[in-house]
Image (tube, rainbow, N blue to C red; front, top):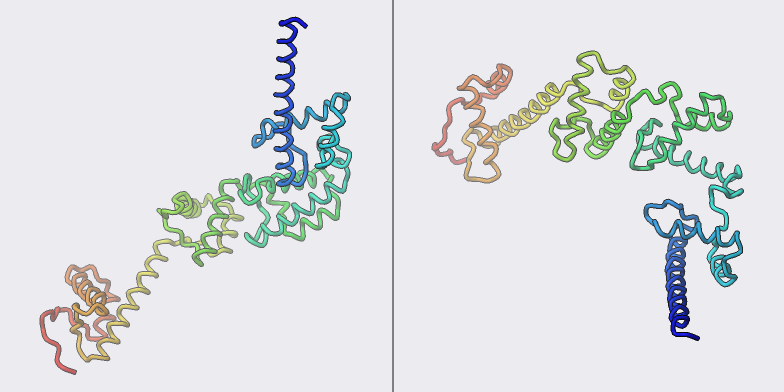
Length: 317
C-alpha cells in the first residue's frame, strides 16, 4: 500500500468516525426529545430543534432505501421511532386522532368560558394560542354546512356565539379579557387612566368611555361591559369615593368630640395626627371658598369650630 493510499484510507476512517459521533449525538438528543414529548415526531422545521428535525427525516429516507444499518434500525425502534412522519401517517389521518383533538379543544374552550363568561377567544390568546384558530375553523365549517349536528350542539351548549362571529376586533377582545382579569384581582372595573401596571388598559378604558359618549360603541360591546360592571362615569365614581372617605373622617371627628367633649384634637399623639390634619384642611378650604355648601352644612350640624384653637390647653376630663 502506497503512502498516498494509506493517507486516503485514514481520512475516510476519520470522516466515518465523525459521522458516527454526529449520529450518536442526534440519537441522544432524540431520546431526550421523546422523554419530554412522548414521541419521536420532530417537525422537520422545528425552531427549537433545527438540527434534530432534518436528521429524523433523513433516517426515514435511509430506512426506505435500505441504507440504514440493522444496528441503527434496531436502536431507533427500541425508543419507539416513527418511520412514517405524522403528516403522512395513516394513524394521523384516522378519525380517532381528530376526535381526541376535538375533545381536547372542547375542554380548553370550556375552561375559557368558565373563566371569562364567553367563547370569543381573541387571536393569539396566550392561554392557548391555537384555540382561536380552532374556534374560527368551527364557525367556517358551520357556514359551509360541513359541521356535524352533534359537534354543533356541543359547541352551542358551551355558548359559542355563531351570530357574532369575528365581528369584535381581536385587540378589543384582548383588552376586555385584561379588564376581566383586573376585576378578578381588585373586585371592580374602575381602572385608573394611567395605571402603571398596564397603562394600555387604562387608556383603552378611557377611549371606550369616549366612544360610548359619541355613540360610536356597538350595542353588543356596551351590553358585555355592563354585565361586568364597567364604570362609565369615572368622574362621578371618583366623587362618590371621595365623599365616602370625607364622611368617614367626619364620623371619626364626631366620635372624638362625643368622647372627649371638645374639638382640640392633639397633633403630638400619633393616633390623632391625621384627624387633626383633616380638621385643618376643612378650615382652609372653608376660608378659601373651596368647601361645598353640603359639606359646610354637615359640619355646622355637629357645631364644628371654623377657627382653630391650636395652642389652647385641653381641660382635664
